[in-house]
Amino acid sequence: MSLDAREQKDPVFEIPPQAPQSLPAPLHALQAPQRVEPERRDPLREFVMELPACLIDLNTRVSQPIAATSATTHGTRTLAEYAALKEREWRGTLRSDEAEYVRYGTPIMRQTEGALARLFGGETALVFRSGMAAIEKTLEAVLDEGGHIIVFAQGYRQTNALVERWARRGLIELSSVPIDGFKEIGRHIKANTKAVFFETPSNPFLRVIDVRSVKNQIEAAGSNALLIVDDTFAPPPNQNSFECGADIVVPSLTKYLSGNNQVLGGAAIGAQRVLQPIFQLRSQCGNISHDVDCAQVLEGLATLDDRVRRANLNGEHVANMLARHPRVRELFYPGHTSHPDYDIAIAQMSGFGGVVSFRIDARDLFDVAAFTDAFVEAAPPGTFIAPSFGGDLPLISAVTVVSHFQQSEAERSTRGIPLDLIRLSCGTVPPQVLTDALQAGFEAMELL
Ligand code: PLP
Image 1 (cartoon, rainbow, N blue to C red):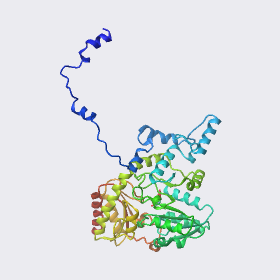
Image 2 (cartoon, protein in one colour):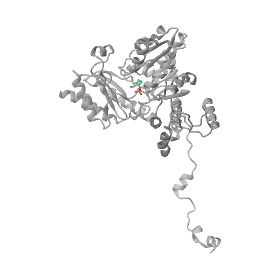
Image 3 (cartoon, rainbow, N blue to C red):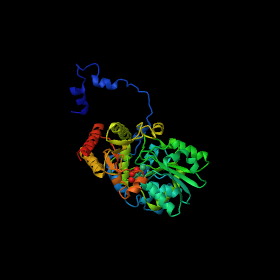
Image 4 (tube, helix red, strand yellow):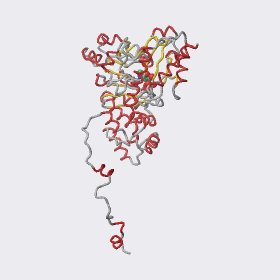
């Protein structure tokens, strides 16, 4: 039978006489004109939708970092091809899958840098092996020919140790200013001031510095000093440091931005012109972020908005519980009215993060240990006593032991670090889990 004949005779190809005149309901619904929602701009949603494809393509996600870890990421077989690659590199027009040599950057590093620049609202970004590497290379580039820098006396101790060492060696001039000094920073600015550097909120007391006010004072003093902000504790969407006037931001990627307590990384973000000398130093020294870490940071960025908002809710929930607890001596949470910088925090930040510091009513280190250990025992698996923060799972730190163990009691007291200070990173677990675990900690102290 010919095909034509079969088509004419086979009843399968004929519309059955009892066929319904209208479409079945589900199909009809799908064909009905769609309700058109008015277009609403959501920058973070747009950001997520444009993240590099390595996030979605499972095969690429696995193979891309491995391919990129070869030292020469883009081998060429003729000198003319190589010259063309160099020219594209020089013009800044390398294709997204191209790179010359790993120390100068890899495709996935550049993708991560593009995503970070976009997220923070900076022109360009450089990723580093750690947050401290980003800070070190940024300050080294800015203070290349020496000069004066102003830092925050209660800032992250590793950053302060770094600039104190350079100052001791006579390489730079250093002013270490307590937080109240920042309200009148103009008084500390000199003709050779190259940079004002601080973190906000700060570690571990979550002090908040008014970025806009510092910027205004630098400008009023007629200074060209760069304003460099470590906003590790206030990632997007909680703070936009560039809108507040920062020239460079240096977030650690180890914390909220990767969000899984597994990655070490840092970034410097800012204008191309300002970052160029930092790029040159990084290219010389190779303090670059690993590709596999970059892939994890990109994954983290895709869920950042939800994670940070959830951490904010947990931070507020825990702070409210601790503020009322009879065994809490002092609470440090910028979103709580008891915090000395509450007014600045409310004006500058749109969320206050998932880190809460507080002093417990402990007689000695044994009380502190009873508290932290019972907390970990009662919290979800994966909760540890550890120095980091900003991941999905909670981390708790008895600050004296975890970050300041090398210091004598006298040194700690000069830095204002009491024995009973606890820093809790709430993570994104259900809030009740956190308050139950904290209660278990307080009860364990009662038993001693
Ligand atoms: N900045 C702040 C405020 C920090 O708390 C830390 C680390 O805890 C860093 C920078 C350094 O980050 P990293 O550990 O990625 O070097």
